[in-house]
Image 1: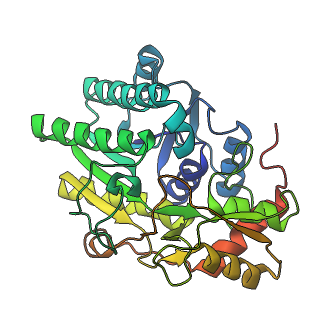
Image 2 (image 1 turned 90 degrees about the vertical axis):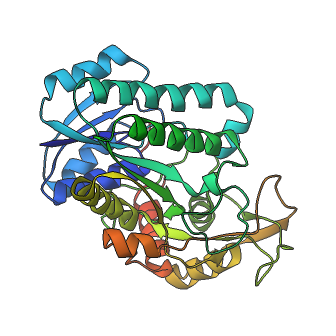
Length: 339
């Protein structure tokens, strides 16, 4: 049997594809290269020594998606990553984000149902919690007040998936709420390749370390945290990828629909990350303190105990390994995947 991976050429999707191939799964990847590059597919093959089927398509194209299922009758499950993902951009392009992420997911679910494929692991996000009432955050915390349209699409898709399950209990759905994925594969062949100036902290740090950017902007040093800078739960992307393996195996056995936080349970501030990167690499990171950004929150980190108890999953990599692997990726790919 095969696993369909939507958005499988992206940052998290590519690392997950590697873990599934290494675990002996057959996979089929679909991607429209909106947030990725074709060369990623070659890198996945280089790391694993294995081949797989790939289709360049957009989930909004129902006919093209149906063709994938027609040609691959052995698909029995789906890992769903595909979607627009830039938090800041979503504020300025809400129509595009709601249309792409919601309609794409609905088209996928409709096609899966048509072909009798009713097992999914969905890529959700800690953004569904909005401004958390307390930390660490448990899965039963209130959701539905995300601070941006990107986060709202995750909230809405989670609701859609719950309603699909209520209407048909043959579905098996595992929802993974990621915290902050960083790092890269140890080979340095795949990693995070942001477009333009990075939105996320660690790619920004690596570009400052390499001299591509002059300094790191630190937005706010007056939060109620140990050093005044924002605190987040950073998780190695390989740990995150392995969580999808565990989630798929578990939901196939248990059935139903369930939600899991995927994080380390430890919060690191922006300056903690700067110091860890300097310690891990020996490189000096210049930074400049600036005012808070609208919509940012002080602290957000996970209680991942449910994933440990039910999935048998917990993060293996520490913050120094995350920084070293990110630095290795940047060093070997100074211009990301290139044009």
